[in-house]
Image (cartoon, rainbow, N blue to C red; front, side):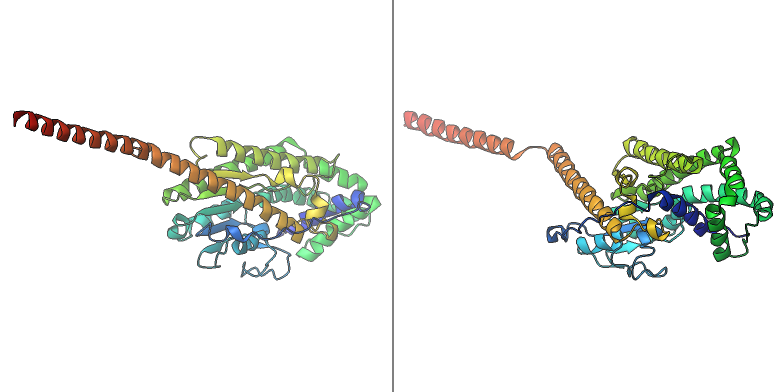
Length: 361
């Protein structure tokens, strides 16, 4: 049977909504675009998954990432005055995990990567979703007979039927006992080891991504956007705890890479895990069974990136200027002093010659 990410999304959304449906939600106002930043960047490239592709936003088109105007990627394109397809490139694909993003980067025109001032990598969420989904899907399959004995219909013949099955399992009071075993199976050591392997594989893929970008002779500032936790407001569930642990470990691995001598040059981490922790219901569509960012969520991500990008570019400019000054043979002040001494010496020689010549006369 084909696994579908919708199965896991329904599972997570139901667990989140049930205890939180009475919470009031307030959205932040969008900030104004700062025209002063237009022209600051000559080229930007984005690689990622459904978030950077603008999934579920108005205008979303799987085959055209330029259409969802509220997507953080396209907000950045407009903010910096870039032109889609010429100075701005978005190669994000809904469903991509870090391994698929690595392959996509390797298949991108090296000149586009080399000439970019900024490269954004927004992956990791699907790495976690895929790992959890495999464990969850198999555990539910193993309990199918027990669900059916309780009169709970299960059908995994197609994506819609699979999502309906998960809804039945989660909302039917009769499913409590077999559902408990499903969650327990996802907490077994073999499954937990597979979750640890997921984080290590993510780290290896990011290392290879950064190394490949630098092999193109790119001097771009790289921004690694960590995935947020759509279940951050849920407690007391081993599946949720496993999700949070993987996401926390991914954030930690990302930070370690950014601080390392081998991979840290120009590598910046944008921490959505911390930022979204207390704002999941505000910045995602969780209340409509969708864990992706909404319009306000994308606006906030864009604001975080704009700040990080501007700060990094400013620091880079200062560092390059300092390097240039250090490599210069003489500073302007030294040149002026030497010139002044030379002029004084020439004048002294002239005066001495004139005086000597006059005495001889």
